[in-house]
Amino acid sequence: MADFQKSLAEFAARSATVVAGSVDGFDDTRKTIERHELVFPVAYGLDPTEVSATTGAFFEKERGFLQATGFIIRRDGTLTLAVYSTGAIGRLVAADCLGVIDYYANKP
Image 1 (cartoon, rainbow, N blue to C red):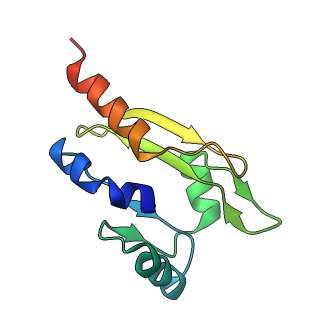
Image 2 (image 1 turned 90 degrees about the horizontal axis):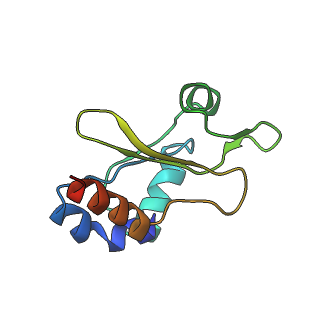
């Protein structure tokens, strides 16, 4: 999330919005927001089973958490890109998202 925070001006220049969601409760989410000095919206207290069923995110039942899942969604609500991780790697980074946004903005 810190990567996206550092790139917020670039997202804003493209009229793109960054949001995040977490299964963590309020206190843990607040700590994450403070640690990374996030100013974009971060939803908290999401039900991991529900999020997994709705989005296809990988839910690790044994450890009780979701693996990172990232989406680029167009203004009309259609999905442009989805990245699903099943482990410690395989996440969207800000530069990749900006590149995809630019690609579709310049696509004839």
